Amino acid sequence: MTGPSPAERLHDVQAAIAKAAALAGREPNDVTLLAVSKTRTAEEIAPLILAGQRIFAENRVQEAQAKWPPLLGDHSELELHLVGRLQSNKAEDAVALFDAIHSVDRASLMDALAAAAAKLGRRPRLFVQVNIGDEPQKGGCSAGELPALLMQAEGAGLTIEGLMAIPPAGVEAAPYFALLAKLARRHGLAGLSMGMSADFETAVTLGATHVRIGTALFGERD
Image 1 (spheres, helix red, strand yellow):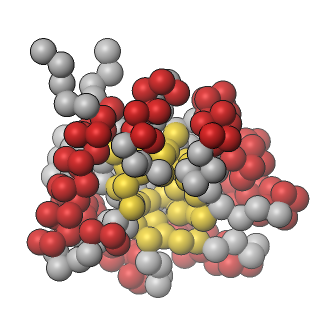
Image 2 (spheres, rainbow, N blue to C red):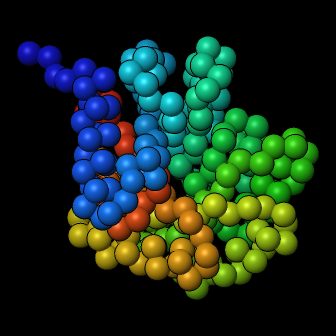
């Protein structure tokens, strides 16, 4: 017995986003669905493109460089976002390939992105990643470091669209989403990149503007 098709999965996720948005008095169109295609092949991605998905996300620059140029060549309307940690020495490659980078989290990376943007004449939309649970193994700046990073971005001519976070695993995500939304409001930022397959509906009710969905769209990995 086969599982749901990519088109059915996409429809189900879109319906769940719309329902969560309605609960919060929001418009479904205010939420951008990122299909997280890390470790997925071009053959796995193509059916989602065919079903109408236009915005995808990857975790690693090198993996994206290997598989996305042909797909982007065939579908110029697609957007590609980077949601994984970014090394400063990969900043130029990231600026060249991605339309948005969700994992800006330190001063050295901000400098590298500013230099790459100036060199390439290309300015991806940027989100600062906040380590919302203060977890040592995760990327992201602390809430206390956020004001200085935002000031640095402004000085470097970089526009920060919003904040991104990944709550700690195995605990209720809502308080962490609420905290990220509060930080964004405090700093006048409209974008909130938060929520994945297990918790995106909660994220939408708490203001997410970008949800990062992998498993719910592609199915479990083999």
